[in-house]
Length: 398
Image 1 (cartoon, rainbow, N blue to C red):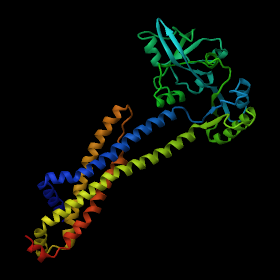
Image 2 (cartoon, rainbow, N blue to C red):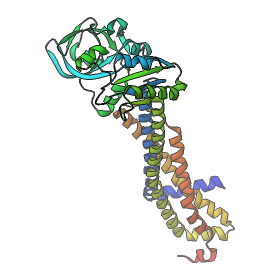
Image 3 (cartoon, rainbow, N blue to C red):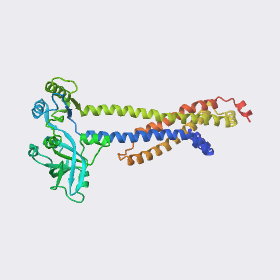
Image 4 (cartoon, rainbow, N blue to C red):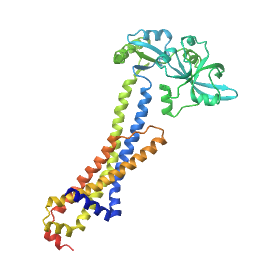
């Protein structure tokens, strides 16, 4: 009986192609929106998460601009932080911009990142070619640097940069390494999100970067932990030390746990996904109303057919099931077409914005399942109306 009802439903849908297409259009648009939005968003979320995960677990980021009386931190202050239990290493982070020049090529604004040897010890994959900065380079008198691919293309196109020199802020530096193509730093992520990638990035010993800023104080550093599970306790200890250093002045420093930041981001992403699904579901509801309207019209057009079937002994449940299956079939056709369209749009969008594409099975299940549910909900009333028709009144209908 069910197979026969499905066959009759398909015949009726094919007999009214244009009307059926316009009816399923709302479902198609709704499912397309749900699948494409969720798939693209999940791709973007995965990209962002991978960027932050690449920054490393078990790491704290401390910003310490200080107060009017005490700007930033000196080496003795950092040593106090380093003595805290479970602190395995500290890496000062100095960022600035300066001019770069080589062989007549000049860039007025190049991002400079000052690092120490601890940073490279905890991020061994940072350097793709050459060598990282080591402890001997931290004296402040070693003018060496590591360049990224943008700098290579700008100043060393067609050449091997290793061993070559480049002038930064009027001082000659020797290139000792090239960063890996997939290297991620927190400053690089922030620059990418702000759209301010500049003219490339060059990493130098942090003391050299401090000289470029005409400042001997450090206002930001990374703390590497021996045990990431004790991050909260370490944060309390760091805050106690910095409060003492800055005489308990408010807003003189902040301590960020990147793992906690990831948890916050995931919660926000869940909320955004739910919001987008809710917005896209409106199109499905509109499509459901269209299906109900078509089924009501279909019932009125096939009144004599319904009357004849009931006169020949068809049970009301059979009549109701036939029209309900037709409504569900319409919804599922829209759901399947919407799934195909949504995946195509997701692939195109992902390539356009350069993020990874991955088929989201939960989005497909949600879209198709929702479309089927819409068919049941909005098809039930017309189907019930058809099953309750009086056969005599139905047969009298012209």
